[in-house]
Structure formats: C-alpha cells, structure tokens
Amino acid sequence: MPERDVFAPVPGDIVRGFERGAPPLTGAPVDGVLDDFAARVEPWPFGNGHPRFYGWVNPPPHPLGVFAELLAAAMNPSVAGGNHAAVHVERQVVRWFAELAGLPAGSGGLLVSGGSAATLTGFAAARHRAAHRSGIDVRRDGVQGGPRFVLYQGGEGHGSALKAAELLGIGSANTRIIPADTQHRMRVDLLRDAIDADVRAGCVPVAVLGSAGTVNTGAVDDLEAIADVCAERGVWLHVDAAYGGPAVLLLDDLAAVRKALARADSITLDPHKWLYAPVDAGLVLFRDATGAREAFSLVPPYLRTDDDQDGVGGPAWFSEYGFEQTRPFRALKVWMLLKHLGVAGYRSLIEHDLAVADALAAAVDAAPDLELLARGLSVVCFRGRPRSRQEEDLDVLNRRVLTALQHSGRAFLSGTVVNGAFALRACVVNPRSTIEDAEAVIAAVRAQLTAA
Ligand SMILES: Cc1ncc(COP(=O)(O)O)c(C=O)c1O
Image (cartoon, rainbow, N blue to C red; front, side, top):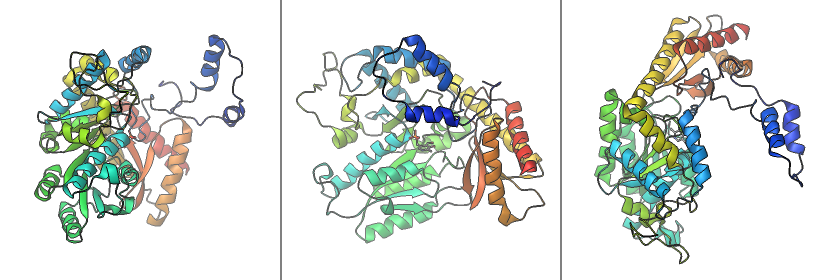
C-alpha cells in the first residue's frame, strides 16, 4: 500500500462501464469474475489502508479481522438468537465491553451496523422510558398528539443523532443544540437551563447526547457534569463514544472520563473505528438491558425465544433488544481481535496513533505557513495561513489545498469547519502509520499551499 497513491478517483470510463452494464443473463467462470474485480474494483479503494490516509474516522482493518469476516461469512448464521456459538460469542463480547465501561450487573447490549444504528437504538430505548413515565405507550401510539419530546446534544454532536431524532418522530428541530465552550465541549450550564426551560414549557426531555470524542475536533465533553444534570433531572444520558470510546476505556489519563462514562444509560462504541475491526461493527451498550427489551421486544409466533439457556431457543434473543431480525455474525472479528491483542495490545496501538497525531500537530506548529486550530484525541485540525494571504481569503485557499491534496495521491485529509474557519482535518487511527508518514503528510500539504 505505501507504494501506491493514497487515493485516486475512479476513472470516468470505468464509472461509465458500471453505469451501463446490463444484468448478467448468463453466468461467467469464477476466474473471469475475479479478473474483473482485479481490473475494475481493487485498484480504486477508499484509501484507508494507506498509512498517509487520515480522513474521517476510517482505520484499515486488522488482518485477523479480515480473516474472521471470511470465517463468519462461511458459517453464515443469523444471530437474531438461538443456542448456537455465534450467539454466545456476541454475548461474551458485549459483556467484555460492558465490564470495561464499568456498567453494573443487569447491563447488556448488542452489535449493530455502526455508530448511527447504535445511537438510534439507544435513543429508542430512551424515548420509550421517557414516554412511559409520561403515561404514553409510544410503541402503540407513536409520538402522535402527545407532549413535545426533546433531545439535547452539543454543537459538535454527530449528525447521526439528528437523523435518529428524525427517525424516531422527535424531529431535528426538537433537538436542542447546546453551544460549546472554547474547547468545543458542551456548555453544561446551558444544557441545564435548556432542560429546565423545556420542562417548564411542558416538553418531555428524552435524552442528552454527550460526546466522548467528537468527530470534528476529538473533543470530550465533561461527562461527569452532564451525568449530574441528567441524574438530577431524571433524563437519559447517551454517550456517543463511537470514535473515542476505546481511548476512554483503555488509557490511564482518561480514567476520570471512564468513571463518568460508567454513569451513562446507553453508550455508542464502534469496533469498526478505533478498534480496527473491518466494517461493519458498531456496539450499543445499555445500563439496564430490561428497559431496552421493553422498547424493542416483539415476538411473533413463528419465532422461538423461550429464554431457555440450554435448549434450542437459548438465552433472550438479540432481536428483542434492537431493530434487526436477521443479524450477521459481527461478533467474531471483535472477539478474535480482543483475544489476540488483549487490552494491553489495544492500549499500545492507540498510544501509537496518539503519538503520530502528536508528531503531526508538532509539524504544524513548526511550519510558519500553518496554523493549528484544534487538537483532541487523535484529531488534528489546522489550516494553511501564509503571511501573504488575508484572513478573508483563507477558506477558499484551504478548500483548494484540500482538493489538490486529495487528488495528488500523496496524502488524504478530510475537511471541516472549526470556529467558523475552514480547516484541514487529520484523524490518525492507523497503527501502521508512522511519524515519518505524518511529517510527509505535512510536507505534502505545504507543497500544495505553495502551489495554490
Ligand atoms: C463521534 C461519531 N459518532 C457517530 C458516528 C457514526 O458512526 P457510523 O458512521 O458508524 O454510523 C461517527 C462516524 O464517524 C462518529 O465519529
């Protein structure tokens, strides 16, 4: 991979070939199909296997995870439930993570497709509890005609939480976006005021989404203070630890955050992000698994869920705790990786990524034409700021630099906005990326800046 371009868009003639192709009416030999894969698919990857790809939150997969996917696909169970090994592997994975997160006995959870599905699942359980306390059967009546349900998240909360609000009939306009402090963390005083104002107005607060590592700047909210507000007001706390969760669970200097995380009612944590599992693998954890079951359980007569640990039905079915019925064997890759690397192995891989991010931030600081805009966990946001350019030209300049960089094949960053300014954003989640790679990425950015 390091010898190849980081990324190149799929050439137009290949794209047109995909757009024009008719359904194959007769089959082709496997060799021919594989040749076509080798010619038209494999050469044009997303880019995240490359050590100089720092876009979004997309690590390369650990090779053992790739192998586990093959094994899981070959077994091809439905992990809706039952008394087959995949169910017990997933139960063990969930228990391991609940334990690492410090959740009490009675907690539970399940693997889902990613962070978006995890937060939707957590919010659904929160909505069920809030509605129940208001005397509403939300599963039967939906949110029609009742009081106004509201959600809360910080200005840097992930967009998937807004989508969840829309899907749950709460509506994105009923998600209160709580402004951030100077470190991009949710202002807890404003959260408290917003909840109190909503309650006075007759609204029903459903949940607060706290972030343990925002996608934008890697900011970690003051979860302890948020948990206090939620506890005082009886509001569900969902922590989005999709990206930052592994660092919070494993690193000593985040022990205080870990302690606060253990107070959450539900948690999103994605093994397909900073645990290097191949896509897809998201995880939602519940402090009280029974509440989640009440929100989701729907057992038609053709399904058997007899909670008979030793019989055919096995333990309570996963499909009673979420919205998927047929479910893939996602747990195998997560289980194998945790067994292979162990907590200590994961800790050192994450520490490596943080060291590379430190080197990247140091290279930004040392460059006279670059400006550091934000740093949190392994995210580094910065921009080109040559002395010759005016502030009002910088957004256009940096957008141009980013596009040119992405096309150059030398490095890949994504873009974002920090405090109103367009920023180049790097997120290091690749143990095979080195400090030399980080320095090469900064050199590639500066080359584009000079050329722009
Ligand atoms: C903090 C955070 N939350 C949620 C998500 C959504 O996760 P997914 O893309 O797996 O649905 C992301 C994705 O990057 C994220 O970074």
